[in-house]
Length: 189
Image (tube, rainbow, N blue to C red; front, side, top):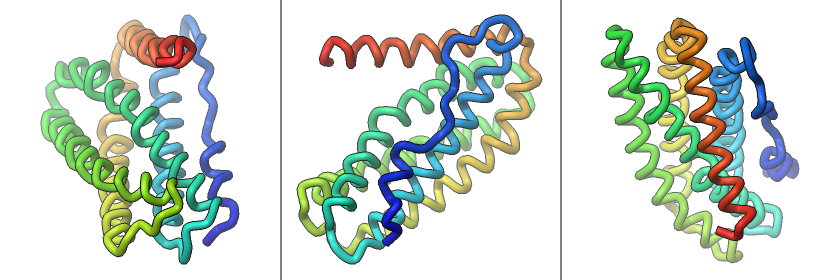
């Protein structure tokens, strides 16, 4: 096991949540790319967890971090795509197939993540996860590879074609989504 497994949890690209003007038009893609970087990092962490020979304190902490990322942060990214991007990109007309595939993949990934969550809870409490974990984690990694490829090849270039004002509006929606979470966390719920 890579002893730097927890360093993944703190990694990633920070994106300023306050750009205005031209920066606001470019910010949605910057945040989406940063989210994809974190998805790859936490998927790598999950693969390392699944390959661990024993449930150590480090592996347990990594399971907590993976569970937190995939069930607290990732839903914001999915909402960005399904609530802010998809309706606007659907108007471009040429993305019907990639957009429907992205949504289908979101549902499949949610199913796999729901099943992984049980194993991550076991590991977080110091229990052995059981035999299906490596296969299920491998399936998640395969799904993410295919999913991110579609988004980066088809969806991201289409976002760039949107009017700057439209991209700015997307950015405002993304910021609001994250601000609601920050306020709820500050209030303890």
